[in-house]
Length: 427
Image (tube, rainbow, N blue to C red; front, side):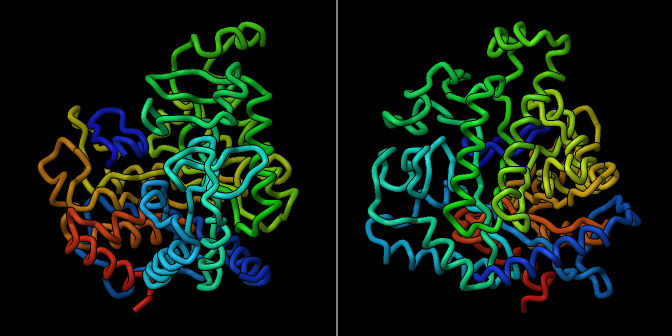
């Protein structure tokens, strides 16, 4: 189900509304060079460009061009046989490569479970319908093989805290789910179950899972999504806050999240310094700071031994001219892009998350163009042109299924893919 629309205080996506070592190192070196060389903020467009015109910036060497492959796509794949799954994975990676992308972000740990054999997490219900049930083969291994054979990097996308999004997702948790083995670590919010970010042992377990993933698989990085604190309710960590002696709840919560993210980053780098670690926060920095308690300003500014992330990829899922019912255009793509590009950065790269799931449906803006701006057949390519012009290091598209197999808007999705191929020099 697509994310729900919001006209006030926009946030991020919600899924329920919603090769060789040498090749990897060479690609990473290119990404780093692009990030260092592309810091100039020189174009601030106030209206949607008509098209990607000749002379506008094309893809830079080392530009990050990614797509999110979520559990929503993965749960529709064939897990009855390894050969069946491999064939579908191959077709998926063919589509990504043909689009001119170089990275896939695959949701390998969606609900405190795993699409690979893990000593720490049960098998995901995505594989068989039953959490904890072994499908009889290793989906991640096959996904990696098919991605790397096409020159695509694959980052393992992890939801760090979520164990259950609702009473039905997943409907039944395995006996080995942390909800059952460590219920003292878990909080319930609106029917969902989450690890309590205030409990250091729970955070350490997440980091151990990151270390296990990069130790056992040749992933090219680890990617966290935007689910950190599940609520602003002060009751969920009241005991830990009282024991901490801290005076500012919001700041203390941000410190809890940063400690986890920093530890995960360091675990990835300890395994292989060339691996990437990144986060895709909500596109609204206010929500990041004060609702999910992710210190995106601090993460971007850090560098050296203090580095927290290699990149951020904020979810800028609004179109040109997007307007709130209050009349504010802060979140119009041209404005929020410039706001993020203006944030001080240390060593972290800045990529831009683009909302392919808006195609045809619109972005829910209060202005009259909320649907038409997503019905041009080149909305995403135009946004790519702008982020390149402003010096972003690349982008990621949410999500694969909105571009391939889009039954609601097949012609629009096809046109968007054609425009992206052209923008990426893939034709």
